[in-house]
Every structure is written in C-alpha cells, then in structure tokens.
Amino acid sequence: MPRASRAASGLPPQSQRAIARLGKDIALARRRRKLPQRLMAERMLVSVQTLQRLEAGDPTVGLAVLASALHVFGMTERLAELVAPDRDRAGISEDLSRLPKTTHAVSNDELDF
Image 1 (tube, rainbow, N blue to C red):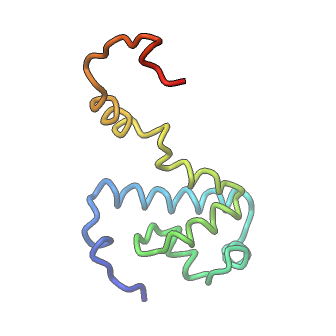
Image 2: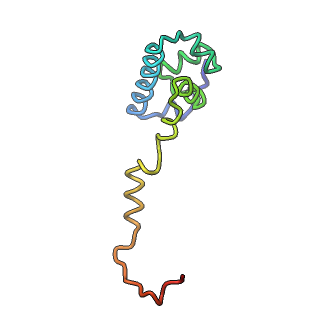
Image 3: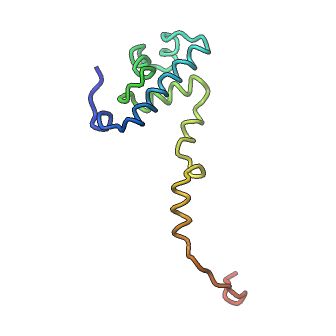
C-alpha cells in the first residue's frame, strides 16, 4: 500500500486530472506497442503493481518510475523538457520585467576591450 503524502493528498483538482491523464496515456502507449504489463514492468525494473499504480494515475508513484516508463518508450527527453527554461513563458516574462526600462548609449571609450 503506498504511503500517504501531504503533497499527494493536497493536489489541486487540475493536477489530479493531469496525473490521471498521464497514467492513461502511459497505458495507451504501452498497449499500442503491444507490451503486456508484465513485460513493461520487467523492462522498467518495477513490479506489475507499481506499473498499474502509474497507469491508474496514483500521485504517490515516484518520479523514477515515470522516468523508467519514458525510457522504455524511448521518450526520456520529454521528461527533461517539462520545465525547460526556453519554454517557461511566465519565467521569461518575469525576467523581461526586471530589465531596465531605459538604457543609455555607451561610447567606445567607455567599453573595456
């Protein structure tokens, strides 16, 4: 039985739905590849029960289990792209808001080459 975590029990509904969808998508990707749960679990180095929890959208399943599933599918790079700085619109917007509002021209004499 998975250990309850405050983070998992306090997830906002939209996060719960996203994790449930992720689980269903993983199950669909596995079925499309005609991988039985037993073989998928073996390749992930986890139990069938852990894979079933992942596919059911259990938020207590560890990140390493998700990474293993993506590795089996050949999709490891997608995990690294989740919060990639170049795709973080809110972060980019914050960076831009901290830029000076005005600038002044610098003469060649002021530049240190």
